[in-house]
Amino acid sequence: MDLDDIELNLSETEHSDEDVQLTPAEVIELMEEAWMNEKFAPEILPHKSELVDCLLGLEQHFEKVTDFYPGLPKEDWNNQLVVPNVHSFVFLKSKEEVEGIIIDDGNDEDGDLVDLNRGSQMIISYDSVSNLVKKGDVHLI
Amino acid sequence: MNPDEVEFLGEKQFITIIPTFNSNTIHLITGDVGPFRASLPIRVPLWMAINLKQQQKCKIQQPDWMEIEALETIKENEKLSRTFTKMPSEHYMIEAKLLLGFASDDIPRADEIRTIIKDIWDIRMSKIRSSVDVLVKNAGSYAALDHLTIMEINTIRPILPHALDQIYRIKASPR
Image (cartoon, rainbow over the protein chains, first blue to last red):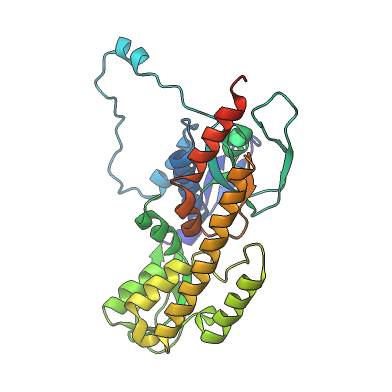
């Protein structure tokens, strides 16, 4: 099997309905970003099922992944809810140019506005950039 | 992030090796590597280079930036600049550690190189400490970290985000 000949289709619903074609190397890179985003974000991020499907389609010999539900009675789940501190600070690297990120400075005054260049890195509170993380304009490092 | 994870990220960098064997192309999920022809230089990911070196199946070609003269220039620029300069490799410390650790026989003046890289690291670490000091004293809410490598960011990860979080709580609490 020659991996270069394979084109993977990933529909990015947030950007457009058209399928985006990715090489296996690009899928791996996006998986790695998803891993780091999930690792460093204070909240649970949207599941990247399309990426996972891409990889599973690629590697037919992967063992079948079965869904896993921890055996906790349903009513107990409500007691297990933890509200994450979405204001906690994270490190990010920008993949796009982004303008006008609003900084919450802890008072009621209007916060500073910050612009990001492609490739620039920053420590910033997660809630200022959570939408950018989910859109894929920045990734956590 | 633990050091193994940082190393995992750094091992994807490509470096040049001179194989001592012949082999067909290897198909990796991230792309093809090879074919390998004995004594013809070829670019491979760092993890593969180290693996082949451990089996004594290749010599490693020192990256251009890892030569004494290049490193002296980097060190001087880092000293003169108030901000962080861009490093020649996004994972310079990982590359240096692995290459000097496993392939020091392929790298002339390895001990001197180790010392200069350590000097560059130390200069950058002292800049990080003074920047963190300024940031915390000014009760800042964000800071640019351009040109810091992941391994360097990792050194402030255990403390800086938490410190900024506490500062924010103090600022946000009603007086």
